[in-house]
Length: 192
Length: 192
Image (cartoon, rainbow over all chains, first blue to last red; front, top):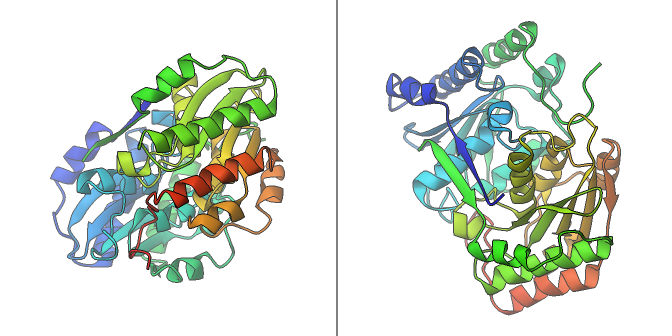
């Protein structure tokens, strides 16, 4: 009753070991998180979402994948897993260290309502998204109720937002998951 | 890099042991989470926020407190800690088990943007709040950007919302924390 542990699946460490340490372009970083999303589905460890935190030199700090079903934890979206692991790795709850350190969260899809709310608390200074929220909704994922001007809301908190980076590849990973009959794990009555 | 553990402080288990197992009225349940919030401050284990998940008979399933600073985890708001622990205790990511089980999340304050987004994913069927968002803002907490009709948005997802339960006591706990100079731990540049 008193503790919860969220652990990345074993394949993630092997995958990171085989990947570059530094990803110079934003497309390279996006390709990495889309690969995480695909691998997560192939290994049956969660939904088709990957994320990672990188420093301002493009060096991978931590990866994250969706672990909702495998960890029995509705909070364990890829972005939440990544920022939480980054905070543990850095030893501080504010990744940006009071505005003195620049870290980027790269996600294979735009944030749901929960992840949108979590991003300003995390201390990252940039969000990079692949698939659009509409792409996630189109295949059946519920994204929740976000303010319509969510990008402006992040900019207003000094968080830069870059959208549509390799959007087509990212959206294709979502469609593949849906086409293969992957589970949709939003709480509530079963979907008709 | 690969795992994160969120653990309730030791005093919580002792506090629960000394508390009733069943809280028949909603005010009793709110009094319990306000006490958690106050104890969390007295024990210096986090911010002035408490939450808990109860079953439909008023039986305490799990408690939660804010652990942002002590756990170095910006996600560890009281509500997130409570729903996550409930999911571990129940062995499922959907507390409501596909709409067949009624659980209530009681929180000493209205949800921030992140917690608002997390509640529909958790599977609880009722949210009970003490202090208003305005009370939290008034003492210096940043609540983030929520849709203005957030209560209606939860109702629209079959989540009942009960506000202002012992609001004054709950708001007083927030004011005491601020008056005592407790830290405000939102990410970003230091407050002026």
